[in-house]
Length: 410
Image (cartoon, rainbow, N blue to C red; front, top):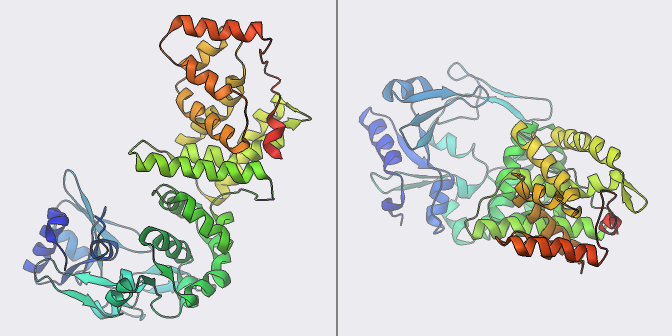
């Protein structure tokens, strides 16, 4: 049923070494699910009855990580495999405790258990399949194989309780739905509506990780539409969908652009997408009549990023990148004298140019600014001079008092 040639040789060697030391060991979770669905897994996780300390003794190139969920990273020069100990839902085992907060969210889970107990601690049945690459046997205690066949996402246990334990499971259900083209079980749908608000208690660092998984996996547009339908989009991005046609369309165009780049094996970065998703807020705060108020524009950038930071932690390395893209939107409108040459040399020019094209698509503008910059990039000095001269002839020079942005708020 599963072809071992599609499995990491390093992962198989770890399973073998654990077996040699008289421990159980299985490939588990997403890698097994994906293999059964005809998808090549990106990551391989292993579950075992060995404790983190015992795993650490077997593998010299390893480290124990985590407090909330203690596990072991085993690594070589090119791969890192996550090895977790079977967990139980009962307190009082080993030296750990299953600790929850007042809302029911698990804040510590280091209670070791058996294989069967571990299966019931997982979120969805399709993720609770354990595969031994040595024997070729699949352990399935929750009808996961049946639900994969039926293309259905089903919760293990009461979804209300499971989402209280970990609110991020609602986002995972949506992500698996679009990735696998499975339907979400009705009980899970109801739980998402009822327990979605618990996402506000999840750390911004973890939500940034989910932001990347949801929007940078080739299914950004579909995932966003699902998030909106469940009312969860506000927990990942501080975008106010208030009926503004441009704002809504810009988000869709930015997401489509991201999906297209992934499909074409082009580079992507969360910084670019965040810059696009937050742009309407920046324009709204900066407009004075039909003009950009430059003081408001520059003052608003940091406050908008701070608001987003409260939701998802944006790594510092992206802050300058995002602000560069925003500032360059103004400079792209300024095509006087030597300014276009300076703009073209900016290290973020290409990203800013790509965003300009997205803005024009979203606003359905007939203005030729994007076309002008497409031509100006060509390696032809005479063409560059002609483009600037033509602007002067037609009296189309644009100053830093940028006109026309108000159209982006209609």
